[in-house]
Length: 631
Image 1 (cartoon, rainbow, N blue to C red):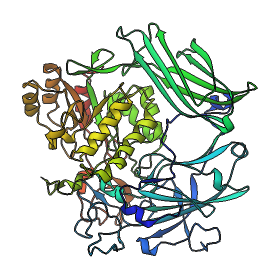
Image 2 (image 1 turned 45 degrees about the vertical axis):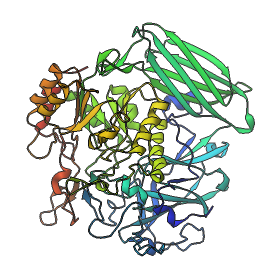
Image 3 (image 1 turned 90 degrees about the horizontal axis):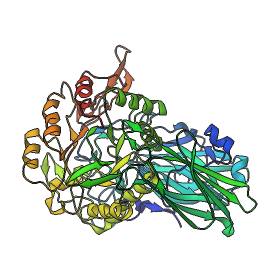
Image 4 (image 1 turned 120 degrees about the vertical axis):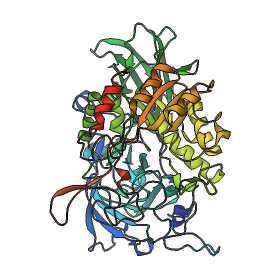
């Protein structure tokens, strides 16, 4: 198959040769590797790559991926890093509208520029930056021994084409989900050349219109992964509770890849936090292995104030009994359900002391570190924050593991926002809303739900799936809701946009979700025999000297059992640290400070913390009121 530039304008082409999404489990070659947390099955491709920037598609270096291409004029760039942070293109913050509005005529789904004459010819799309990336690698010895080698891109914004040794490998969109490709057929002994072409615009631009700085490039880690002859490709862990809330109900489904139908055994063991053995069994290797055990008595429940986790260990053995791979995973026993129109965790009403959290670092944008994440969780704990909405996209995989351990209730959101297609100048005007009920967009957004579910399905911290943000409502989002309901009966589903189109309120979302609804309006809803419990998916917009009046929302918690809290907008400012041109001092700059027009200016500064993670005074108010309802 040859790559086509036209895929950028086709909403039905969003993955080509991309491997199906699967659970985010890690796997190791031995107990020694497991103890160190370093897997010899992986090889990082982070670091310095060759790089060529083009302001528009017609200027890009066509054929740059060929081994004999002259790249003497290429620059270098760090991976992971935003192209704009590296000094190319322009930094731009935008809230609602699309970056090209008033400059380039575009309507869904065109990324290269609208076909205005109807002759199939598109304008160049002069704001569609293109980054050409290359680097060489030689497989580590352990990876050369494996039956298959794949490459994983944790985040590429916004559309990527991939080549290895001059051979086209695949194409992917969905900036914030992992993209994985099989490199095995294209690998060579010795040095290999990997090449990636990243376009800033594609059809995905219409459904990635989040309120944030608009970046591009390879902004999360890249790695090679070797898979042995018998490999756990996917697993589903469920640690639920029986009706007595003390008996654990454990089930495990494994999907195995077996080279030449290799045989062996799978050993499954569960221990408690002190290392005491609770369960172990051995099953013969097969393509699918299912194990269930419903007799864990007096289980230690997982909850915010006591996030107790059990240790699962899956050991794959070959026919001779030698270890092939070891898969560890921590999980908790907990039960999420709706009873009498109230959301319950372990039989008790959930109160969400939540925040919306963009991934952010003042120096590197959405390229964040483990230390950033740990600092955020420290701030959560110090200020009685027990819940987070991953606004408005899947986060770095490590964040979900950290929330499991910290007991943070997660609303795991898909990468979907199409705000600019249905709201113009503040008015609701969905004349060209996507995805809407358009069949050509349906599979693209359902695929985003599928990726979100498949990758993160084993994380105990996730209590709710969220279908996306500010995308109106229609048959396509209803199809996303159906996907979650068909695949997961252990969690609830959230979506706010049905308030814009009540036709879908019985088809989408288990909860009534609103943004910035005044307490009086919430009380009016709750006083009139509502269908669903109420959650503020965004409230207390913390911009400037705001966040007063939390007491009015707090009072609703005690008065109305169906009011279950919400998520403050938002946790951290989006601002970029730079040097002032006049004074030379280090300053934080917001939207509009980079000659970016149009702009929503300091609207990017509405966090409980400044972008350098300095707490704002408003956080004291949050700590006080959230401290009254910790569960």
